[in-house]
Length: 306
Ligand SMILES: [Zn+2]
Image (cartoon, rainbow, N blue to C red; front, top):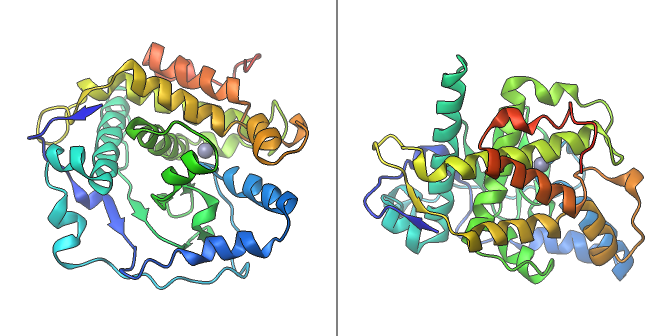
């Protein structure tokens, strides 16, 4: 996957809340505090199940607040992320570029159907973060908070996907995860999120919402190389089959069945599904990328989710 070296990047869509001191210890402490392996597994399941979840996190849940300060100086996103060349070379800039591309696509798609897409920000954080949905730690994984309409991500999650979940990794995995989160923003704008009544189970509304977000991620991917940004040219010039395969691999590693059995070491219990099985997540991402049509992502109308 490649960015156009000369295309410009809009860093106003991201706020960097990471302090210079790092502060990564909090998620680890919570996990370690759980004790034995089984508990850690359960915790990880709970936390990871938030990946892209319309996270409703309890406030005052005992998580420490991490003081957040904007990064200033030469290392700030504004300073270091200016063009596609920077995105090719740097993970922070790459994430910003994906976010630009994703939101450009949805701006166009909404306009085509007579609607107005509202560009929203992603906050990069490290350790923990305060949101209008409550406080969260990095261990919660990336999430979208409907109340403040923002995406939150600790980019170290991508390392975790490889080390803890055994994903192949790769740059396009980052794109898939961010596009999934923005899929939740689209659902929020369209009012789809309000249709969620049942929060767990193989055919629950929660699973339908999550699979639709996977499908929307695929729809964006289908249009990524043809969506111009504000500079008039597409930011992304190339997505390979290997990129897509790696995104599919990541989708499988965060399926409910895989997490329950392979990560949690337990039995597969479909009544506890919140995001869909590995096969379903792959199926709906594929539906999105093959059709390029958001209308094909009607997981709420689908009798058979796959
Ligand atoms: Zn989600």
